[in-house]
Amino acid sequence: MSDTSTVNTENTFKDQEQKMAISARNINVVYATPTGDIPAVRNVDIDLPKGSITGIIGESGSGKSTLIMAIMNAVTKPGKITSGSVLLNGENDMLKLSSEKQRKIRGKEIGFVFQAAQNSLNPLRRIGQQILDLGRAHEVNDLRKLINYAKKLLIRLGLDADRVLASYQHELSGGMRQRVGIMFSLVLNANIVFLDESTTALDMLSQASVLEIIRELQREKNLTIAFVSHDIGVIADLSERIEIFYAGEIVEEGKTSEVLACPKHPYTKGLIKAIPKISGDIDAAEPLKGSSPDYRTFKQKGCLFYDRCPIRTDSCRDSRPELNITNRDHKVACFRVGANDRD
Ligand SMILES: Nc1ncnc2c1ncn2[C@@H]1O[C@H](COP(=O)(O)OP(=O)(O)OP(=O)(O)O)[C@@H](O)[C@H]1O
Image 1: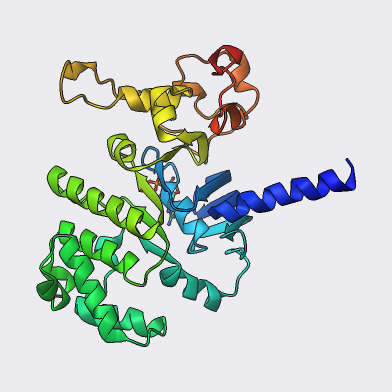
Image 2 (image 1 turned 90 degrees about the horizontal axis):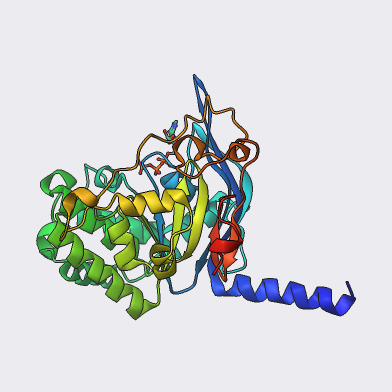
């Protein structure tokens, strides 16, 4: 390769990184347990394009939350990130920054609502006091303005702001706590937001309205959002890009409309078939059979979906398929997605 082409390739990589709010590579996370290590996230590459909503979907235990924690370098014991890099806006590697710098980034540049948000509020402090604590921890000068912004967000999220600010966590319902969690993720004006199962405690109507508000805020502020869910309907509704997670790995990714209209991986097809239809034949929904492999006993070097796969062949047991491009940025990890499946 000539010097010029090397420089051009490097520039292309740089350009791509600039367009990514998050660019994570080769993320591996292990949980040490008395019965053996659980490699919960393995060799994951993921990009979150600036100003877009990416949906991350997969069955319970597939590693979605662990991946988000890893991107924020917030994995706690017994978990450990064993490899990877996470570039923020093409620059700082979250996995290499000092813990003080990371703490400042979490909250101010990256907002988050973890699945455990319902329990992560401080039970001994009123919500208003906790907003002030957050502001002080992030050296916000105008705390009055911060409280006013929190109120605005709470009202937008359909809550009685004054009442919420004066409340303790136990005085709020599960759904209210989730909305409060969303307010906390946005109140410092972060431009990257991770929402992990943030609407699951809400009934369907409230969920729809909160999703609409998230979408509105995303457009207004050009936020980059990663939305974790096990509900493919929610992801279809909200996200432009989709990442299908299975047993700690991404098995399919691309534009949501394209992946859902033309799924390639048998797991994605199974997820779609399992959605109950509101109209038509309710029995047409087929739950996915079987369960994810147990990482501790899973010795097979082949495809992780082998045991559940309706289109497997013997050779699928021999090696693990990698995530390959089928069409533009639609990628799939399956040996059976052959030339005929490529659009
Ligand atoms: N603290 C922990 N100690 C041991 N194992 C853990 C711990 N946290 C997660 N795991 C394991 O890591 C794997 C991935 O878990 P994770 O919570 O990331 O999955 P998930 O896809 O987010 O699931 P869910 O949708 O149920 O939240 C699972 O097998 C889980 O049992």
